[in-house]
Structures are given as structure tokens and as C-alpha cells.
Image (cartoon, rainbow, N blue to C red; front, side, top):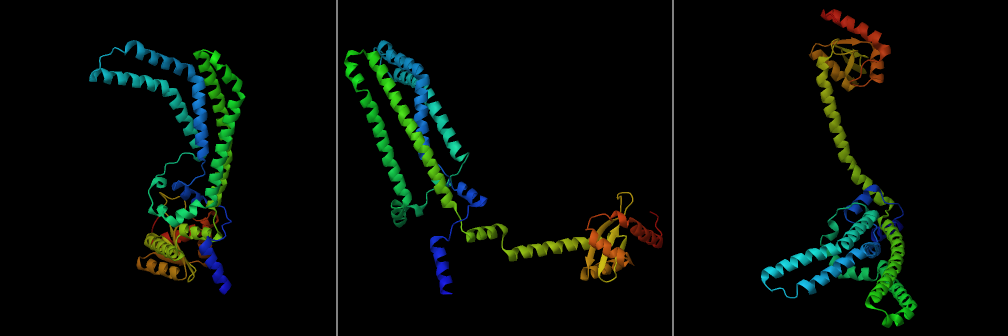
Length: 364
């Protein structure tokens, strides 16, 4: 008993042996809370790469726009009279020109960042992650988070990223040291071209390195996310009970449904043409309307107490009751309420109905 008590205490303290994969419901609940496997490094790498891509593709367009804007300032705006109307119009015009100049850069960056986020987590709209929670400012919990394994990994990742970028910058600039020495003999256009190529080359190297790191980081985040979602067998049992509901309540619901179904069935007994009995164990109520039915239909049936109740209702409403043990047993066992009589029992049921109609003086 003491060992079992200690084992239960360990389960409560440490969350149990979480060795089972998360259920679909656990994953769905975590997603609603914004808990998904996502690498922040991926977004940074994609933004840098998209900026370089837009500069390489639309660099000429942006250069022309910038020179045109710069030239217009010195050629047409130096003698402009300073009034509120002129300044407002000038800012509106230049604001539009700057927006057009930056549109390719901003558009491509935004689009690729959106694609990167969608590729990692899909479409997700959850405000729970940004909802302020006072439990997050708990100093004890915050102290534990600072010295957690996840924090150590994030710190080492940041240090490695800085070292990698520093190495790429150093190796790239050191490889161009001779070109830097010749810049004093190059005109402004050549200097601009050299700086642009060097910046583009360095940017591509950094973006490629960050993208590789982002892929590895995403794999790690995926692993950590799956690990955090793991459940113990007891968790799965508790979730199943929660989804299925309390067995006592379910039993009461089923009992209520049975009573309602029994009540509806008993309301159909007075509409029957004949009650076929065993005579004490089974009772089956049959109804036949040649204008709407292709074959006689079973509208009620019961065994023991229910059979007795059907016979009592039939007696109260003047429904004919006939004893036929084999037929009553066959109908009870082979057909459900609402079914038509099985084909091989048509003849026997027809003889019973013919006799009943003869007693009532009906013609069918």
C-alpha cells in the first residue's frame, strides 16, 4: 500500500509516465491555445532572403526611382515657397513616390513571410496566446524557465548564430581586402557597384546559413512540441471519460430514452389490427393497410412484462389477440419495430389477418 501511495504521489508530482502519443483532441486543444511547432528563425531567414530577392530583381527599378526623387529635390524644390499648403502637397507627393519605391521590397517580403508561416503551422487564428495571464509573471515559475533546458538551448543557439554571422562577415570582407585597397582609384559608380555586389554576396551567405539553421531549429521545435504533448495512459483514460461523459449520467440518459421509446411504442398498440402472442412470453402487434403498405408492419413487440402490457392495452382498445407460438417467436426474433414481416412468414401472417378481418367483418 505504501509503494502504491508513493507511486500515485510521483504521478501527481511529475505528470505520470508520459509515453503515449497525443490524441487528436489533445492536439486540437493545444492548437486552439496557439501551442504549435514553429521556428522563429525560419521567419527571419525568409524575410532576409525575400529582401535580397526583391533587391536583385527590382534593384534597377528602385535605383531609378530613388535617383529621380533625389534629382527632383535639388532641381525643382530648392526655390519652393514654404507654406502649409506647399509642404502638405510635397509630403503627399514624396510619400507616394517612396511607397512605390518600397512596394516590391515590402510586397515580396510580406508574401514570403506569410507563406513561411503557413507552411509551418497552416491557417491558425487564435487570440489565446496574446491574452494576458497573471500566472506568467509568477517569479518562481519565471526563475525556473530561465534555467530550464529549453532556455539553455535557445541561448546556445543565439550564440552559435552570432558566431556564424561574424565568421561569414569576416571571411567575406577579408577575401575582398585587395578590392578595398583599389577603391581609391574607382569612380563613384564603380564604388556603388562594388558595395552592392559585396552586400548582396554577404546577404545571400547569411540568408543561406540562417535558413539551414531554421530548418534544424524547426525539427527541434517539432520534437519538443511532440514531447510536450505526450500523455500518460491515465491522461488518455481521463480524456476518454470526459468525452464520453459520466457512465452514471449516460445510463440515466439511456434509461430515459428507453422509456420514451417504450411510451411511443405503446401508443401504437391501439392502432394494430392483431396482437400475436406466445401466449405469455412474447407479443407482437401487426398493422396492415393495403392502400399504403406493401406488406404487414410490426408496430410494437415485447417480452414478458412488456408483452403483458401490450396484451392489456389491446384488450382495453378491443384489438384482437391471437395465440400462435411459432409465429410470435419468429416475428419477435427476426424483425424489429417498424420492419415489415419477413417474406417467408407472409403466408402465416396473411392467414391470421384473414381470420381477424373475417371476425370484424372487414374486407381487405
